[in-house]
Length: 287
Image 1 (cartoon, rainbow, N blue to C red):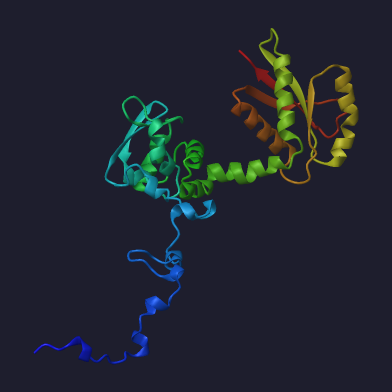
Image 2: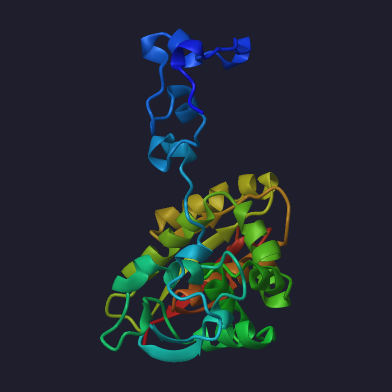
């Protein structure tokens, strides 16, 4: 049975079912497939839209050329070749090896593709043995200490600083010499005078005046004038406020001179007007 459209009844719809689209302004009508501006604003901003200081930098570990700890790595350290694994080199987080083995280090390889480190390789083997076994080196401790500082192996640096060879140098002697005014400058003057006196001579001599207190300093003024009048090469150290005695200072001075490659000996230098024996003579042997 077919119904005539003239007789169809239309029941009123609830208010919520009215055509909401028709009641919106034209500029707010959503087209199919398009997203409103408010919805877009809820999206997380892209990496390009972030300020420079908020951009996420990849971690040092993520930049490692090959993070697999079992990968074999060949190194050329100052012309000496070493073979180890990635896991051994990366055992201490924060070390310089993360930088050396990063992707940006591809230009620092030798002709055979080994990672090249422009550093003396003499003591690198001792450092590598520590990374492999955890055994702290007992030989060439000062040299290994310098290498550990360069490669930023902080745990090994701390361990070596507690050993007598480094503790005595860093804590005792160096700290004392830092309290001696103009020590480094006067040391260079001493070496310059020794070289100047060495012309056509097998050895040269320089007088060193060492005064520990202000009182000794005042009493050495006259003897210093006498030496200068005789054109005797002389260098004065001190006074210092506290610390080792004069003999200890002379020992420190000899140590630093020998560390620069000079052959030197010292003995007391007595003057008739030197009641406090503040003068020493340093003898440099050249050949």
